[in-house]
Length: 439
Image (cartoon, rainbow, N blue to C red):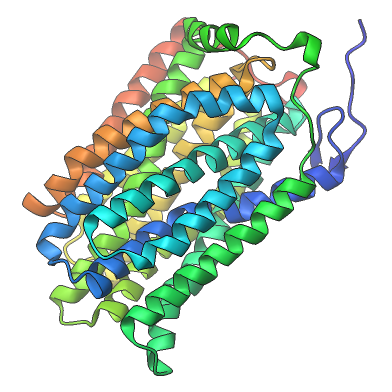
């Protein structure tokens, strides 16, 4: 049997058979906006807690952790069904629907009058996360030829980071700009969130019309729903898939900790220094952007190396960098002091490394026919990680130190790194063909 070879590419990225350049361009657009839209919730939420709801800063860590807790309960319930749905009807409709749900959540968020309202709207947002992150992860694995997988994952990481920096820097500073122009604090928050909702709505249309239609396999080749669910669990018999699930546990926890507690740390520290809420949110957003800017610049460095390394080796290196980045924040006093910048840079490098390392490993190991379902389990593992880590560390943020969440995540990264060393010795797997460099 002759294996199909794609003749299409986008720049240095060779595409999988049947994937056209226009599909790839639509995916790259989605990669830019997906994580940026997902992460703005933390910046916007810090503003709403302080300006709209007037919540005391001493309670905001626990409230933020609880909101993430309920978000992850929803994601735990829906990641596998969403993955199965993507395998059955295709990636495009699910991914597009995710952006619609994000648009709805952002439109409702500034209308909250209580923490209960925030929780309800956060659950709508959670459904959007399930569809958007599941779609992003699955399409990222579908579209490249194997020899270009690491490159596309690196470009995706770069675009994710660029989207995070661009969207959060613009919209994070927008309330203060509107206040300067004479808008009230509440109206500034409302119009900012409605603008973000508009971006999500447009993105839904681009994904709905631009991505490749259809399911990943022909109808006659599709496994039953029960078979998809069972096989996605059975795939964990592969130690490298099991390792990737463990990596997802901490890698998605990494992103959530940074997105939730880094802006909050900067905001509460700024308010303690006497800043107004809008100014404090902007300052908190800036340290978040520093970390994401570092991730943005690091992604194209580590991505090509992942293509040349054994993927388990790559995960060891990535988790080591993540451990260093998170644990280094223990050395910071005030997050707004100039010397703290280097630690936020290390944090961003570590966060994107753990994300790329985990995605590269699951991308190599996930079987095509059950890919959406396996990615669903991968994402569920990440959701459990977020659930456990943020619930515990949200209270540590308030009761012990704003640095506590980062120290906990750094320690967990170190444990996954040790597990990866064990798998590398016992079941190293493979790299990519002629470009594979055995380390």
